[in-house]
Amino acid sequence: MNKDKPNEEHPFDGKDLTLRIINILSEYFWQPLYKFLEKYPEKLKTFTGFLLDNEHIVLYFGKTHLAIEYFGNERLTELPKLTDMKVSYHDLTDLDVNLLDEIIGFSYKSTSMPFTLSLPPFSEDFVLPTNDGMDKLLELNWNWMAQNSIMAINGPGFHVEEGEFARMINARFFDSNDNGLRTRHIKWIDFIPLEINDVTEKTHQLQIKINELIQTTEFTANYIYPLPQKDDFKFNKLPQINRFIELIGDLSTSETDLTTFLEQPENKFIITMGILSTDIYPQRSLEWQSQSKDNLRPDFLIARPNGYADILEFKLPKLKYNSIVGKNNRESFSAEINSYIAQTRVYKEYFEDPNNREWVKTKYDLNVRYPKRFLIVGRRWDFSSEEWREIISEFKDIEIISFDELIDGVVSQFYM
Image (tube, rainbow, N blue to C red):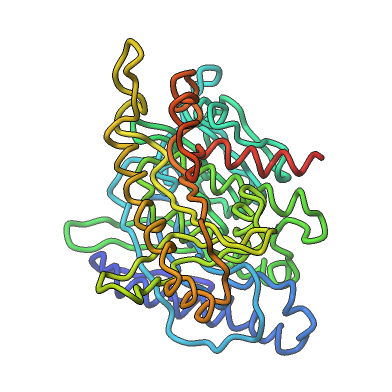
């Protein structure tokens, strides 16, 4: 295999073929990019980081194209060391499928156009919801103005034209099923023309045409990956809100997924603005000083403007049952909601002990006294009844907030 005539004739051995391709790409594409940064170090701050310092690379072998997808951080802080790459592959050569749909993970069915469009040679900032995905995004109040994008509504989807090179950058795809919103973000993917010839029971010949990819090297080196402008608060923060909305719309998301997302430095504004706090302290261990009990670990301690800290706990956005049970003036919280509230009562007990409060002050430099307990759970429509408001008013030191209310509390401040 070489850059002018990359032919191989053998049984499909994905590991062997992947290694050969990685070696070719390294010699003719990645190493020239690396040498470019060595020659022009000032370009380091705008270079697309994951092309050289990637978390993972995935190769997709289709009937007409080899697709190369990159994962990792968009920016570099220093010239990376070229070390062993984490590479995986998918053999789709025997499947009669739309390669792009197969990579995205769901297909597009338009009611207006019974065909697919040819993917442009270069595309950037595509936002492509299926019809079901569009319905779910509207239901979730996804903010369409949060980022620059090229959007297709009721679109037929795309295919990669046979024999043509194509590159897709920063594309987001949305669908919906019984588990809620489905999201697929492709940061960068190159589609390289591929031909399968002389197929026999034991061997076939692959011709992978990488010349067009090599010809993009100079453009790639100078390309600036589309990130929100850091000096524009609205356009910098609303995309992160959208990512959070995508998480809560996916029923496979766990509580850990949510808290891990929110504790990231670029995302913690969702809590500080939504709960009006000055800082957050995730997963701090609370040790009992006067009793022998298991340590506590609230999702977040949140520092409030009054100098004291409160407790913030996250549960899942989707409730298993109705939040209110009973009827005829005997309404009450469901066992599910009562269980969540009971789980937070132990924090009240903990901070009633002055020895515990002093330990937290010494350990974390946080003042905690009669903390309010915030519980984030469910959606707005779970807590909209008059009965709900009457019941929650009886609780003086706990506040239950839906995920929608948390998001609205943040976004509304962008327009003040």
